[in-house]
Amino acid sequence: MDLEFPAAAAVNEPEQQKFALPVDSEHKSTVFRLYSIAKPHMRAFHLSWISFFSCFVSSFAAPPLLPIIRDNLNLTATDIGNAGVASVSGAVFARVAMGTACDLVGPRLASASLILLTAPFVYFTSIINSATSYLLVRFFTGFSLATFVSTQFWMSSMFSAPVVGSANGFAGGWGNLGGGATQLIMPLVFSLIRDIGAAQFTAWRIAFFVPAMFQMLTAFSILIFGQDMPDGNFHRLKKSGDKPKDEFSRVLYHGVTNYRGWILALTYGYCFGVELTIDNIIAEYFYDRFNLKLHTAGIIAGSFGLANIFSRPGGGYISDVISKSFGMRGRLWALWLCQTLAGVFCIILGLVGSLSVSVVVMLIFSVFVQAACGMTFGIVPFVSRRSLGVISGMTGGGGNVGAVVTQLIFFKGSRFSKERGITLMGLMIILCTLPLCLIYFPQWGGMFCGPSSKKVTEEDYYMAEWDSKEKEKGSHHASLKFADNSRSERGRKQNATTEPTEEITPPHV
Image (cartoon, helix red, strand yellow):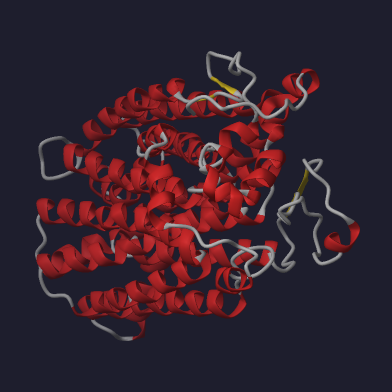
């Protein structure tokens, strides 16, 4: 697959020759060639999605084996619910921290370090013997899901504005495939080990060595073959002066004070957060409600996550295509419509009682909810240039918060049946998507309003994150390049009628 758009700003020939792919003035690739491994852009893509995939496999390796694990450990419905919440709650703050770490030390070191720190807990799963220890290993393993933030940060650092939605969509979507693949992998690995001669309650424990080793291998691959930015790693760029050192407090401040990040965190909680919730409950739901075999329930549950092979990437691609004609306003409308439809199909999923209809509705629901995830990160890279990692972390953390809240309310204990909880979760999706209409970029507009009448430019918006002293030092130069390369978010009509204006004092953005 080769996605290509005209570069917002061309680079001179000597600079172009340093890269295998065409690049813009920030040396970000202006094309997305899915089957390429060109260094550094496409190599970063493949390293990021494979490592994130491994973390998803580890984090959701337990649910497909729950019918066996619960018998071995005598787990109650409350124990299982608590562990499901724990598996996604640990990454809430880890994702915010990961975003900040990416801003400060780069995505390569940040992601590899977290993967190596969490891998031991996957191994520890093989020796647990109680509900408490089961909850703890799921909690600490779940921290690894924060690598999603480094994945999106990495893609936003490597790919130019017109294709960044596609890059983020494919990296996140193919990584999320781990949530579906593990539904197929773990029952298969368990069956093979048991058939070799291991006892049933021993076989599931040995099976956890597979995701643990896979996770560690991806971390070492990132350290050996990865590169933070098109021009090199953070450490070398800072040492040479090519990347100015930034202050942690300023990076954090401009991230947490940008209200757009908080709205995206809320709405992401009810697309990705719902996806995490479904990953935790869907195998057990089909197993118990329709009296299926463990392997059959795993295949059906796996199909939900496996839809990520095209649905989340498709969401990012659609966001990019719509942006060509309608700019940022088109991205916002596409996200609202897609996520609202996901809520509608989630409601229907909880209401139908036929196995065949449930499977069909679940697959349609999966396409919309996962596409909405891809569309979200078609918007995130434009919220802030200086605090991209923090905004990515806030949004990603919001996904985990949504999963925690949803599971606590609807799927903890026996207050609601699973089908009733799924229906109510659909209503939550629709309601929590409405705040998207409040997001407004003065240079591009929002869902219901066009650009500001004060002729705010992209430079005005992104320069507002730097004070006069920082500008004197030249710290803002990367933001200037990004502003120029993001003019495509005006859309075709506005680009045809609007020319860059002279620098004016920016209003509050």
